[in-house]
Image (cartoon, rainbow, N blue to C red; front, side, top):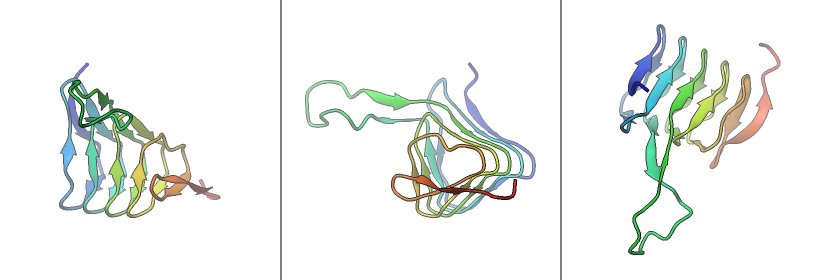
Length: 121
């Protein structure tokens, strides 16, 4: 599997937006995506369901991130590893996305939840 970051045509990411890709992982952003500033994604992080002050090695949470065509993402959004954002979706500002987002969904919050689905597709 090829690792890296791919951003398709007519997509942009606002300033101050770190994208972190671990070995063997990918971040893919499809065409026509609008992503606000202070957007943060990483493909490798610590799994929260473990003891952090123990002597055991921490178990990572890893996975690719895919953002579908025509997605609009507000400012200060965080997307966790192993998440797919469906085409034509909206993620509200200041949200933390920990699970897949279906196509045409409008999501927001911490953690992000479906608010509603678009009526015009």
